[in-house]
Image 1: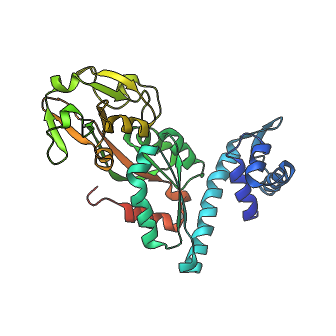
Image 2 (image 1 turned 90 degrees about the vertical axis):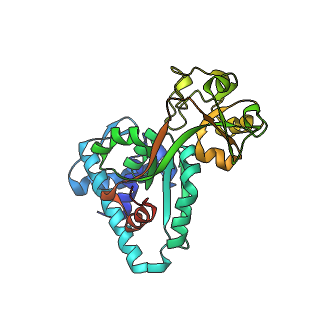
Amino acid sequence: MEFSDLRLFVTATRHRTLLEAAGELNLTPSAVSRAIRRLEDALHAPLFDRAGKSLRLNAAGQRLRERALALLALAEQTRAEFEGADFGVRCRIAAPPLLQWRFGAAIAAALSARWRDSSLALRPAWEDDALAALARGEVDFAIVTDEPLRNARAASGFEAIALGALTMQVAAGPTHPLALKARGGSARASSARVLAHDFACPSRSMLGGQPRGTRADGWRDDQLPRRIRYWIDDLQVLLSLVRQGHALAYLPAFALKESGLVQVRVSDCPFTCVEQAHLVWRPVAAAGWQATLVDAMRVPDA
């Protein structure tokens, strides 16, 4: 078996047809087919169930993909050890845009501190899609929160470290009536006063992408029903609306700080929404630099 054929095979497993795989590889479909046939001949086993022009991994193909990912990672790690400082890390991460915003800069800094010529590609993806991309070997890491990680961890050989918490807060623009007497970036108000004002809310989860209506941002409308006037799934548009004082919103604390918003502390609110974010990887298919980055990103006592 040739490493070039293994790389081509791994790429082909990400697609439904030879034509799609050939397009990513800049090869003809016949060239992709020949490489797959070489592997099948070497292993004396078919790797795909073929129906017309479609490709579908069978059990043998799934086993080979796991082995191929591990072999290719080992080859990359070996090359890195011999090339030393000249080795250029190319880090690929899939995550929801909100988690990219929160943790992307810290990961970029950790990469640059250890590998001067490293690069970082952040791929926007909902949490389940990010984990699926990691399982297929399309990315090196995924950033997700507790629930999707818990659902996928056992079956996929994932390991994870905690990156930090996302604590949701009521946000107001500096000119909003509830923010006019703010001190140190925060103001205080009762739930009755807060609920008298309009809110902006996404209709879908900002992390998983599922339609959730009033539950999309984590606020407990079953306990404290809001007057939601604006439904906005684009985070930057939502932030702009809040900044200009048109509405309140329930947002992660870091978003308030980085967007110049005021936290409105609800004096009698019985709940707080907190999500824990994790950096997820697959050690069985990981290159050596990934373990180094994981250690660099560990939160003390997490």
